Image 1 (cartoon, rainbow, N blue to C red):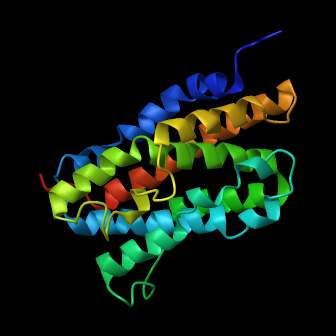
Image 2: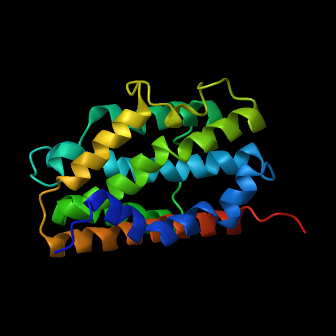
Length: 217
């Protein structure tokens, strides 16, 4: 019987998909300072659709034996995203707000998991929030320096977890929750597969953004 902790299993199994997402052309260009603030704003808009899917119905999962322990208010990002969008796009930011088809597919899959398969929701929760607490901080730092946002201020508040004073300890606790997840081995394998799918959906959004914001030759 495999005694590998589930948090280790899910991290190692999704490593390649995670790397592909992180090293997409769009994200490389964005973090390299090659794209303007408009590209960053458009990316932030796409995040809004994904996090609305993650958070609008999260409360309905609070009593679920598998997904319930992961519903933690200190992680919620939607309000911070809306504050960032108001800063980036102005008070009428909702006007003309449109998801890319790849974003619609991503958010739609999250909503499907919320409705039909809470264990699958855990996979999406993990890929998003642990990523925000880790690599997301690199994006925040780059955005502050590239476009002059105030440190941890409007424009980058999505990446600022004000209620988490010790991110390293929080992430350890989160991994412990993964290790204690109430699922059999087959279900855990399904969660791992969904994790890979989540990264693929995210990569598709990056690819679509890359097509929308190609670098000039």
